[in-house]
Length: 453
Image 1 (cartoon, rainbow, N blue to C red):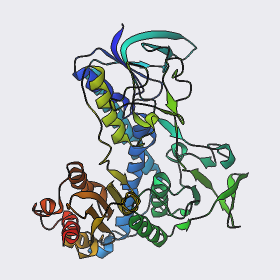
Image 2 (cartoon, helix red, strand yellow):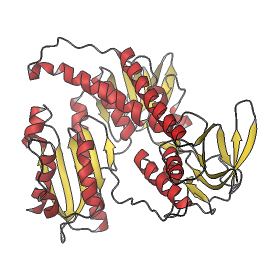
Image 3 (cartoon, helix red, strand yellow):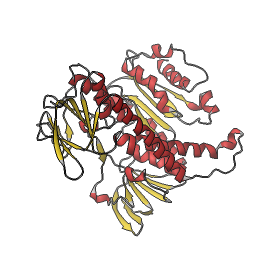
Image 4 (cartoon, rainbow, N blue to C red):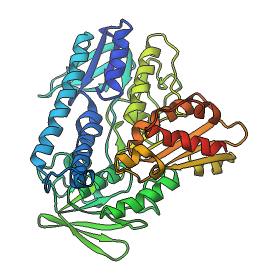
C-alpha cells in the first residue's frame, strides 16, 4: 500500500482526520481538489463571521454616543471589509497548510474518488489521472449550497452563499430565500450595513429547529432591525429583470431586488465520488456509517456533512478525529446528544440539548428556568440588554437537558451548558458553582437557579 490512511477532502472533517492519523504515526495522504479548509474556512463559517464582526463594529460605532464617545457619523468602507475578510481566510488557510506540512502529511491537489475499497483515483488538471492505494480511506467531501433550478440561480443576480461572500459591493436591496441559519445571518449582516433586506420563509417560523421561544424572539428583533420578514410565504417565480431580479411571492406580492440569495439548505457531495464502485451504501444521498464512522465497506470511513447527521463544522471535526483513531485500531465514538449550535445573528443564539418541543414530543416532564439579560449588570454595561437564557432540566432528577440563549455573546456562553448537558450535571451542581461577577455568565446561573426553585 502507498499509504496507511488516505483522506479525501481537506475541510473541517478531513484535515483534522489527517492530523489525528499522522499524530498516531501513520503515513497519510490528503487529497483536495480546491483549497484546504473546505467550505467552512473558505466559503462559510470564517468569511461569514468576519462580516458579522464588521457589521457589529459598525453597529456599535453608531451607538458610540450612548457610551459618551464622540466619533462622528461612521461610514462603511465595504472594500476594506472584504479585504479584511480575505486576509483572515488566507491567514487561517496558510495555518492549515503549515499544520499538514509539519505533520509530514502529503497534500495532493487533485479530485479524489473511490476506485475500490483500498484505491483512490486522482484526477488532475489536464485530464491526467493516477491511482494510489491505502490501508484505510476516510471520505470527507462535504456539501455545497442547495440550488434548485426553479429559483433561477445564475451566480450573478441570483446567488448562493458562495457568491454572496464574494460581492465587491453591497446591493441596495437583497431578497433572501430561506429563514435558516445562513439566511438569518446574512439578513442581520446586510441590514446592519444599510441594505434593505426582505427575508422570505415558507414555514410558519424562522429557524424551526431551535427552541420556539428563541425563534419567536429573534423574529421580533429582526423586524426591529428593519428587516422585512415574510413567513408562511412561498416563492412562486424568480425572473431576471436586466441587472435585477423580479420575485413573485405566494402572498401575491412582487419584489424587485438587486440580488437574491438562495439559502434553503445544503446538497451532500456524494455524487460521482466512487461510492457505488467501492460498495459503500447510502440512504437518501447520505453515506451510512456505524458508530465508528465506518461505512458498509470495511476499511472505508465517512465523516462530515456526507453522513447526513448534523451539518456543522465542529461535528465533522469530531467525526474525523474518531474515524482516524478507529482506522488505526482505536475504539472512539461521537456523542451527538450535546452538540452546541451557534447562530451569529444579532443578537447571537446558542443552543444545546433538547428543546421544549422535543421534550413534549418525547413525553419528558421538565423543570424550566429563564433569566433576562435586562437584569444582568454586565449586559447593561455593554448596552446589550435584549434577550434571555432558558434552561431545561428533567423534572424528577434535575439533570440538565438543554440550554438555550439569545443575547450578547450567546455562542461563547453556551460552552459551559454543553459541558453540563454532556455530563449530566444537575441544576444544583451547576448553580453551586460560583460564577464571577459582573459577567454575562451570571445570567446562565440565574436561569439554572430559576429552574431549580
